[in-house]
Length: 174
Image (cartoon, rainbow, N blue to C red; front, side, top):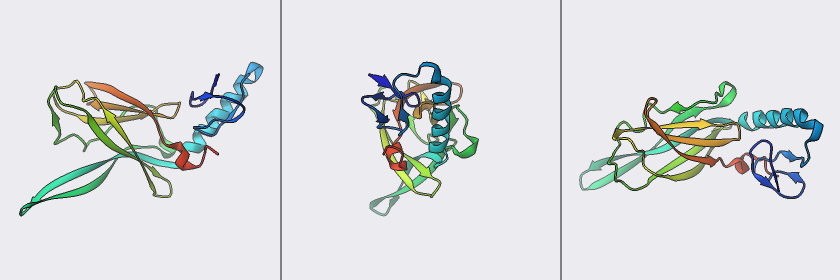
């Protein structure tokens, strides 16, 4: 079984990668440099459709005898032309969230904001950070188009997940 040179998804047969849509060539041989250039071009084509990654957060307010829940979309990782392969930390998410070291899982509602200002939602269930006190959300998009999720802060953090982004909604898997 071969792996896609761009996203490292297992690929069977010939044609395109089911995940990222790159044409798959099983025997690179002497053409590896050309194929790597095609993979880089395809990666940039995918990234050109993504404006940012973010998290959907909720703010709760007690009004009379009712609990009012408001959704907020917080951009964490702008992509576009200025994409960098490093962790970007939210300066908003986590300010008021404190976990005890024994708490259960953390459910994150993430989204991709496209250049057309559409939001593509996806979620991740994560282990809580091994950090006492407040924490923030950090995101990093690696060269294989996986979104690395960090909880903590710039100086003290834990990588808690590495997940594939829903590229199929961007039109590259057909």
